[in-house]
Image (cartoon, rainbow, N blue to C red; front, side):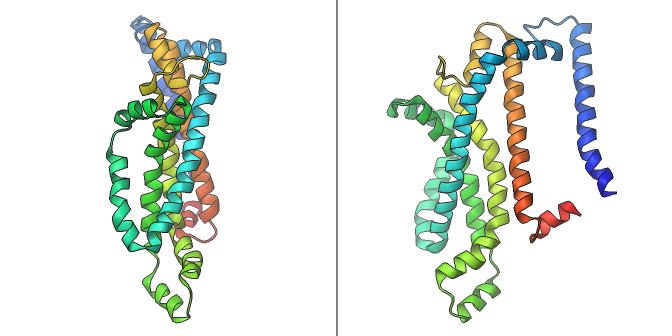
Length: 263
């Protein structure tokens, strides 16, 4: 039964995707829709092959910004969460400002950062980081504060220091929450990078996929637009699969949620 479920989890989405692509191609050809309005999957695939050198270079630029923002969000968000967990006064003082940073649209902040920061790539990185770090911060804070109070009392009874309680109880208890934030942050890093590139509109050799989409739109090369969108979507899916796989590998031996997914 488990093997059937695992097979169905892969086969059913693939079959549905193939059917949708076939229907899409049939509708475009049957209605004779211009590729400038709505290209079919065949046109998109052709554009992906023909423009691969241009799009792959742009993808690499976007990936570098995404990866840098993601790693920075994990490190900084986790460190700030630990700092907040050690002092309730620090959390009460600074957490509202983290919320303000999160709810402020990145499209409103990006133009200012581009003006203030000389390096466009650094400005894009900051924008993507602003989008990605809050899920890790908020989830980690919840996890660190969710350690069983009975175990906390037991640690205190045996004379454990705050650092020992943090390392041996609170951080392990927070890992599922932290890893859930990591899964969310991975996709948001990509979204933040793409949105920041749209706002910056930076062209040239160091352009990301967002600029290539804008460029293709100006040139009415709609198949190239769809090809770039496909690359962004596939990148997001791969990021989610990688973070989910890593989370399951970390938790599967001791946490109930991962063990339930395996059973």
